[in-house]
Image (cartoon, rainbow, N blue to C red; front, top):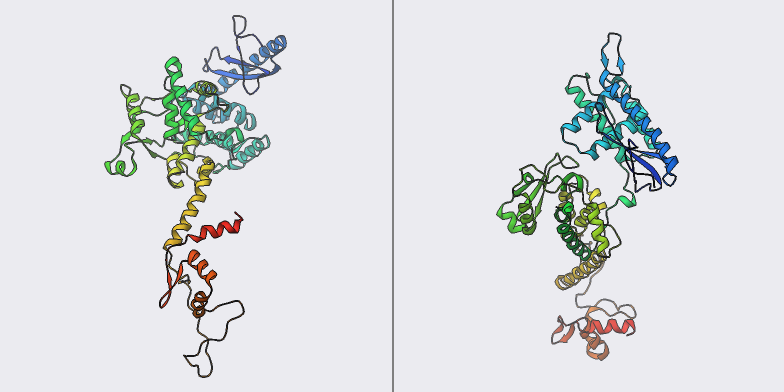
Length: 479
């Protein structure tokens, strides 16, 4: 492995789980407007060769400092000057507005790194740092999307990149830096999630054991504070991990009317504000007595708008899964999918869609994982419905919705005392059934056991005794 940071290196060698064999470096900008900014880059050299990795790291370090210096120069002086000396707004100006907005909103280090990646790695590279905003047209952005698609970019990433442009263009318009906001592509089609991006459904027994292990580790490790309750919130309330569960504050908690409590069993609710929701739509999710008490205790003594469960605890979650002998990792995304799948077994999909905050029911269906218990229950439900219908449906099975067929006209005089013509061979008309049953003992016994018809005085009687059906079915199966 390459050496770690010491007094001889102005950068740090870091590990990247997705490329463990390649040497990566972490550079902190030492001075200038971007002082303290962290930049991660790959050297493209094998980590096993220390000498070559160190040499490539120094070359990469110099290039990074040169890029940062150029960005500072462009941002400070403007990249395009008109003949009158007026600064023409360009992409570098938009990037500066976006960085300032993120810092003002309290964005963390991870969010700032992601923002820098959108601008520097993609937008600047394909559109150009010095592109005037007047040239940022619909066709130019469409061309950019085509190039990114050709590189293998997914729709989710493209939405975020174009979102950077739209967001900063509105800011520039509010500050009178541009006359109007140019028209950009409205809708960018997203791609279905890859296999590793999909949430997994874990058995309830595993989740119970895993939560107990997370709680035990939380008591032993001070860095894991809030890990257990954060997992409970994701599993029982269905909040998203980074954008919702980690931003949950006391201002989100509210009581609900007694009538709702009596109908649903929930005693409180979590109201997710539109600013934190992914689709920018406010939603409300009920919580039970135990969860309400846990959240109230967590909020006690904290500011009204302070996050109750900040921080990421992926390491604790993975260690807890390994400790209970479970081979699959359990993440906050998985817990949200478990919430959707287990909730859909008892409530309708529209309620699950509303609780998850999905604008489209098709998205909710992707969250659901069909279990054997659900498919088996479906068969039992259909069988029960047929049994209930068999007991409650009258003997008349004619379709009442259809209009009766007109009777055929019979020419000539017809005597009402005359019986109809003889039936076909092997068939007995209704008036002859009673006579046949009186003479044939085997048919009478079969009809009495299976159909429930009995020969009584004055005609045929019906009972609810169908005990012969099971024995007849057993004979048909050859038992």
